[in-house]
Structure formats: C-alpha cells, structure tokens
Length: 348
Image (tube, rainbow, N blue to C red; front, side, top):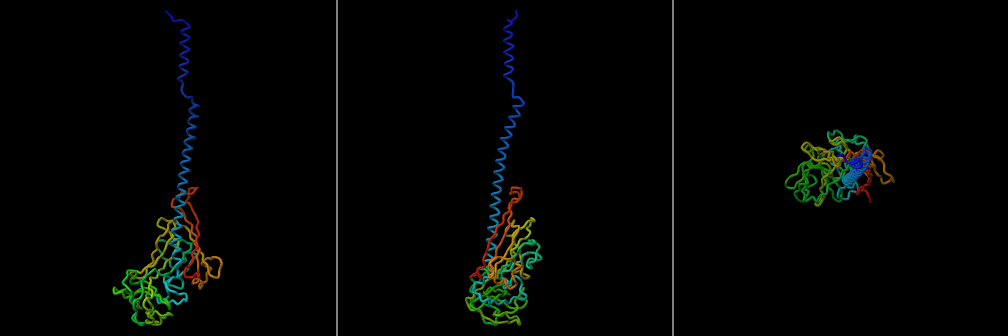
C-alpha cells in the first residue's frame, strides 16, 4: 500500500530544509575570517615588537649615558689634579733630578699636555694592545697621589737618603716621587727602599731612568753626582708621582674604547700599561682654554710655553650603545656628550 502523495511531498521538502541547515561556511566567509584574524594577530605582533624596540632603545640610552658618565668622571678626576703637588708650588720652584731628557711621565713642565692626533703622541708609540686610533685626541696628566707620608729625618745635604715617618707599602724601589716643603718641590726616583723606613735616591745606574744627581736643591744641577744639595726638613710631604695618558684605542673585539695608559716601576725600568676603561667610546676631541683666551682651542693652537698655564679642558665624547641594533635603522644608538673640567691648581 503506497503512501499518500501529499505525505511524500512533505518528506522531500523536510529533507531539503534539513540539508540546507547543515551546510558549513562558504569560501568567502572563511577568507574574511582569516583576514580578520591576520589583522588582529598582526596588530598584536606590531605592538609587541614596538614595545620590545622601545625597551631596547631605552636600555641602550641608559647604556650610553652610563658609559659617558663613567668616562667623564674618571677623565675629569685626573685633569682636575694635573700639576697637584700637595704644597704651594705657585712660584714654579720645582727641581727635577730625573736623568735628562725627562721622559714624558716625569716632565713636570708638561703636567698637562694634549695632542690632536693620538697616533702622533710619543707616549703611545709601539703599543701592541690598545693601539691609538688616528684623528682622535690624547692628553697627558701628571700629578701626585694622595699620601700621608712625611719625612722624619734627613741626615745631611750630602746624603742620598732620608727617613720617613713610618713604614709603608705605598713606596717601592723604582718609584718616581715628589718631595715638597715651603721652599720648593723635587722630583726624584727611589733607587732603594729599605725596611728600616729609609728611602735612598742615589745617582748612577741603580734604577731606570735614574737620577742625574742626589742633590735635591733648586735649581736642579746635574753637573756632578752630588748636585745642588738640600735637606728637606721634617714633615715635608712625600708622594708618588702619577702619570697617565687618556686616549681612544682599539679594543680586543675590534671596536673603540677609552683607554688610560699608566706608568709603574718594573724589574727593567718603568713600564707603560694601557687599560681599557670604558668600551664603545668611539671618538674623543679635547680642546683647551688659556687664561688670556675666551674660547677653547685645539692642542695645535697652544704654544709650547702655554701648556703650563692651560686652566680648563673641554671634552667631547661620542658613545655607542653595546647593543648594535638599538637604533631605529637597526644600527647602534649613538650620542654625543660634552663636559668642561677646570685644573684646580691653575684657577684662582
């Protein structure tokens, strides 16, 4: 017995509607959904990358500021103390018995002297590490270290020794030292430092570069081993001479760094040792001020007799960030900093 025609029609109609209801997304709908999803994901990634770049830039900015602050602090400290003896030597009475010609690290006449091109600086020639970079400034600074050492007793003007107030590890054989009192100052080399607090400064080949005479009087006399005798009285100040050269050199990874070349006594004489102070300082320019001038000038513009009166230095540093892609163009972040430092002993 067959079904009623109306019943069969209703079944077919219901099946058609059911089939239409179970249809999925169309290709266009899927493409629109994917496009919207990509836009959202792209926005999230863009925000993330922008935040990451901002963080790197801020970190790099802090990096270059810290580097410049450290560089200026260390360099300015030396320049401020250039020519400092601890005594009143404004009269210029400084005897120097170091064997002539005075090496750069004992030349008190040039306690502050600069070069516009570090490769022309005689103190930096022949370096195997920390080689100077051409076209950048270098500056020599000679001073005395802080000390509480004083003379306790000087036997006589003809003796090449004196006793200090107490034994100290601040002194050693080969040290270049300065002694000063109310009359004058004297630069000499210790040829032997004894355990009984006795400091010997004889002439001859007992040390390098050595003393031309044992006489510490002013003016200096190197005409004979005795020289111009002078007995520094008790409580005369004794301090180690400090000499340094600041310059831009090539660091172990092939970049530029701020270096400090210091001098210390060694078994075969004085040795110069370059020390990397601040990395990524890629350029340094130093200009100087004379009392008679109102503007800073390059080192080449300072007359040979003018270095003794230079009373300020203006230092310009260019510092790169450690992270090489911190800049907006995928390069290192670069900043230029300028600082001015006065020489304490030459400013009234």
